[in-house]
Structures are given as structure tokens and as C-alpha cells.
Image 1 (cartoon, rainbow, N blue to C red):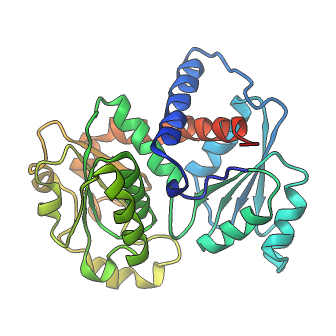
Image 2 (cartoon, rainbow, N blue to C red):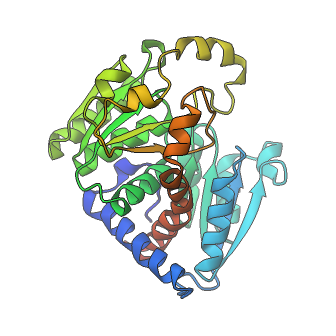
Length: 307
């Protein structure tokens, strides 16, 4: 059984197969040709963390593939009342064809997958957000970026960790700039650097956004205050002064550099209003591509169900 818990579980060939499937299915969708790749299948969507893009994209995606999505809030199922994760997994995986989970700890997701009889997809954990980074890579391809030089500016969070894994597996250059107190998880960094040795990926770290952005052709960031960190807001805003992606910082990148943001975007915190609106077309293409990238992932998992 193949699950989609972290990018590190896949080879370069497998990740590119998913991207190719996403491109194919997107092209069919644009022609209003909805191929029932997952006809009559049911996707269970467990949300312990709320979301706009994750819910809409997965629910719409499974419908366009010929199946149906079930929204399962932790407030509405026994998981939210203390039922062990492994019991929930053993029950609902006998009734569903695939499960997407958006939760906090990566360990909870992995426990569910261990006991599940069907493929499990990571819709976000505190450690990784792999569906978003697959979306971002699909967007780069569509925008003609064949050799990415990616600068990530901001918090060393689940988005950053997933960029680390994608860079290490695919072999492109990634430069990460974070405040020292908000650096990436050292264990995840070490895993990525070990993977990077096999692909000659160039991964570097700095506390200076200008160092990261200089000569990059992709600049990306994320919110400084993620869900569950609201009590740290003032402390974080102080620590991240100087990390805003604005026109001054973007001027250090290549002239036609892309700016990506996984949304929601908080203007004049991690990104200036001017920079956001200048790159809005690409940002909202990126948002739309959550739908298409995730369809590629779901169909790939379904096709490799017994591999």
C-alpha cells in the first residue's frame, strides 16, 4: 500500500509521474472532459485543522474524478471524542477507498496510515505540507521554470520542510532564509541533506533574506503565524522584521523571477501589497493548481494501490 505522507517516500520518477498525471487531467478538465479515473470511489477527508483550499480542492477533485468526498470534522466523529487513531483508521478504511487527513502531529498521520487498508494522503501536518509543494512545482513547470533556483524567506515550517524534500529528491537549488530562532527542524534538514547527496541538489541556509534571493528565479514565503501559534504573534512579528518579501527584496532576484505564496497571505507582514498584486496571476494559478496536483496524486495512488 502506497501512502502520500511525505515526499521523501517517493523517487524522482514517481513524483514526476504524479505531476505528469496532474497535467494530463488538468488539460482534460479544461476541455470539460471529466474522465472517471476513480468512478464510484469515496474519499474520506478528516479535518483536525480547518482549511479553505484543502477542503474545496479535495472535495471538488474527487467529484471530477467520478467519486464522492466525505467531510469528516474531528468534532463530528469519534476521533474527536477520544477514540484511538488506530481504531478510527481500522473502521473507516473498511468503508472508504482513500483518506486525506489534515492534522497536527506527523506521528498521528503515520499511525493512521499504519492501520489503514486504503491509501492515506497528508493534507497538512506540523511537519510537512507535501500536496502544496507538488502544487508549487506544477505551477513552476507551467510557467516555464525548467531549472528552479528557489529562495524561501520566512518561517522554517512545514512548507519549508517540504521544499527541502522536493529539492533534495529532484536535484534543484534551494536557498532558505529564516531567523535563527525559527530555523527548520534539524532532523528534517539532515534527512534532506542526505537525500541531496544522491541528486547533487544544492541546499543552503542563511539568516539573511538578501543572500537567499540574490539571483533566484523563484521566491516564496508563507505566513509567519500559522494555525495554533496565535499566542506567539507579537513575538513572531518582532523576530521576522526584515523578512518581508517586497519590491526591494525581489529586485535582487532574476528580472523575470516568480513569486509564490500558498495562501492565505497577510499583506505587509510576509509580503507587501505591491509585490502580492504584481504576482497575483501566478499566485492564484498556484491556488487553482491545488485541485489539479491533488487529482494527479490521488489517481497515481489508486493506480499503485497494490504495488
